[in-house]
Image: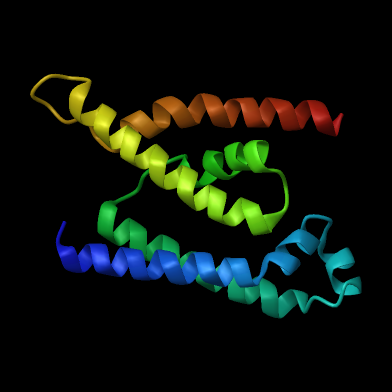
Length: 145
């Protein structure tokens, strides 16, 4: 990885988090469904298109720089929601911070778990993420019954 890659990743992540922070009211409204969001005055189609484009840009940029790292985007926001609640004003920055800390820790573990070898970071994230995702699915299944 080069410093230009780091600069690009930081720029894209900052723009993405700030743009999501600007949409916290809409994100909170979407928690209750698109129909309720419309009644709250949220331009649903435009907001969805903006957020999908934003997340696509962020994901494509990060994957092109670091490769695919599974489960982080699926599990970390749920863990953050458990820690800080459902309000997106706190959830968006918490997800970004917890995700960054998790990946740094996963990188450290991938470098020290096997002496003189570096495991792919995806192995470490899968070891944590797969059980975490399974717990989320089981919990949601119980709630929906």
